[in-house]
Length: 308
Figure: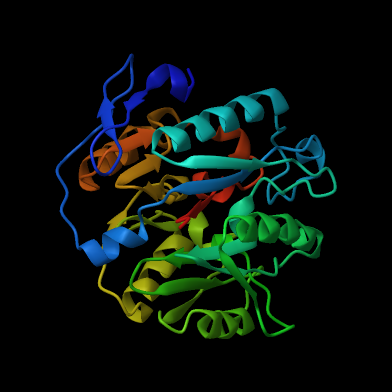
């Protein structure tokens, strides 16, 4: 069953959402208060997504090639994902697919956007660097100022970046390096940029995300626990950490006071219960299984924006 069959989401109120139980889904909602200064950073108006190229099925970059991607399912799951973004109050701009870039649908990797300023990345895998130009043009068409990394040796994937509202956490991985962290600090001098060395995973956001203001979810694998130790010791902000059993459970998308999470069928009842109770904000289950086969997560397929 797909998310459109599971959920009915009705826009209302200043934050834009009132969630109601529909069919077999469970949507959890609790009253939440948080600082206006932080809150404004996570109130989005637009999202950029991108079509899925046919080349995604056979030529996308994968750590595990054992599972075959089913294009028809991926297309339907993307359609549902976009529908949820719209129902969260966002205007969604979907760029056309580009067959030259099988992974181009993972738009998060091409830029970090905070307010009306964007840092264009330089993806760590050379085959993905051509994806950035279309994102640059789309951002500039929306009036968002773009900057490039000023160090030619810098490599950076957006999937290695967690913006918390207090600081920018950057995973040093096979795709992102220290030069990028230092360059990113020059683009966003108003926020501390904190480096988190990682190994045994593709990106930092493969195992940790900001699930709501001041709260970071972290997976349960041994590499994830090393990340948790580093976050606790190196992060400059103060956060509550929610530990989950499975790494894929930790990828959450925080949008306008709501959390997009994976459904119970994909992450199990234990992690699902933790997320729907501990986050204390509305949670929206979104099926995304075809994209996990190419190391994709919920956060990978959208760039969230505040357009003036």
